[in-house]
Image (tube, rainbow over all chains, first blue to last red; front, side, top):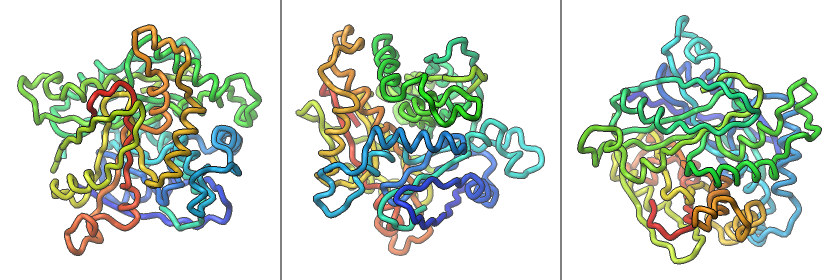
Length: 140
Length: 140
Length: 140
């Protein structure tokens, strides 16, 4: 079985950031030479998540407002007794999801470019965004 | 590595619909001749999701009421400035989950039927339902 | 392709329990001799879930309070007309997530121990906890 592993590193300045990683992931898939299989995108540290959705400013704002409502910051969480202050980030990323698995299929591939290796629908599905929260550790 | 890809298409008439796809997925697994591995079930378009749970009418009603409470429709979402009106569907499917990965194991297989290839527990776990929301695009 | 399947069984006495399974999963990975690939951790019965996060008492308390707020028990759920009383557990595990897929990579492996086969970050990511809820069925 062909397995290819690679890493993306991000440093964020804000407490919460959304990062679009679809192009980076597609480039890694191309390098891997996998034409039929899956991509697993997993985020570290643990208060970050990975999800698949439209990369649209309004929708990202909606996600931010919604996450703040469902898992508010600034509360007296038990987790903060450890000295951490990001319990809400742990909850928010639980909502958004953590590991993402996306299909790769070359069945319809023509030009052997990544774009062609992915079906139109799948290409859309791989519009991964990445949400990195919390303590400023570099993460993938 | 044996990789098998197939597609299911659905047209829904309602804004929100739950569709039971376990039998279709099991049939695809059987066709694939994969006896040990995983099934990845991924939904497109992006406002649809896939999840694993009991196919029970009361529970589905509970999910619908709960999703409407956590991610209400009819609000003034930023995403709607693009002309779309389904921001709530994006949020709802985030709660429900998107890609589902289910184990296939033939370790206990006897008759080589799909039923036997899947352990009893796993068979139950593959009672996939599929939630398609939003703009009426055909989806898989 | 090397595929290895194993099972963990738990009996819980409480209606809701969090169980740490990282060591068990890491031992299974070691036994499998898979050095590059993925681990799929899937929970049965259906009202149980699997998630990846810090194993910290305060955070687990936060999760419990938060889940009770988002998906309260003791309500008149439609699902209860079947005789079951755990609709809230179905909702809670939907929030927490169900199947978890974690990367295994031996790229940096030195000593062939599990610890070395997993990168430091990945090792942290595999700090799986397991939430078993509901009707007391043994589950994996």
